[in-house]
Length: 208
Image (cartoon, rainbow, N blue to C red; front, side, top):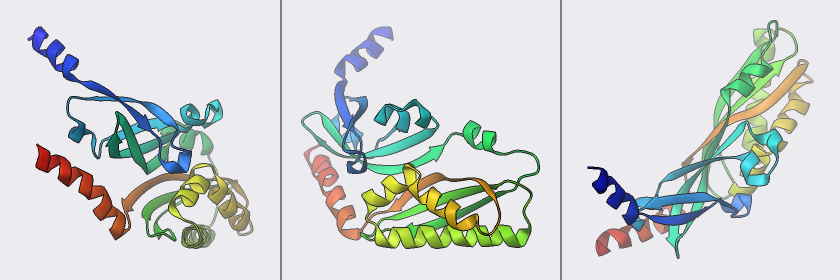
């Protein structure tokens, strides 16, 4: 049994994984596979801290999905991100209100993401104030997505620019402690790109 496991690992080849173009296609690690076709759609996780070398972003997890394999290198697309639960928990204090909202937005170039925004008030807010903060979050997210392409939107979302814009507008409704885009998930790509990404996989299946 042990020899079978060893043989199985010896058959695996190492492939370099690159982040999506939104993050400069930087190398994020290595993944193993005994068959190149098994790499397609595999999701690789890293932290923004590891990606840009800044420890203050350790709480931001990034997910990239492999969409192309060439010369032992895997290219990816941004699949989503999330903030650690411990980080979100550290922002919430007694007497504050957490206002969250989940919104589907579509970028200028046709990518649709499901985005979660959380806003933490400095004091307990009224229901009507929370509704207005949620409305502002949706309006800013939707307008930003409409004017930015996918890579631009991802950069502004992950690096905090969109959260900052929401904060500056929503604080006029009620004093805020913090606004974060706490989670995102890519739920659909432009039709043309879906067909393009499916082609290499179909080719691999025909060969096998």
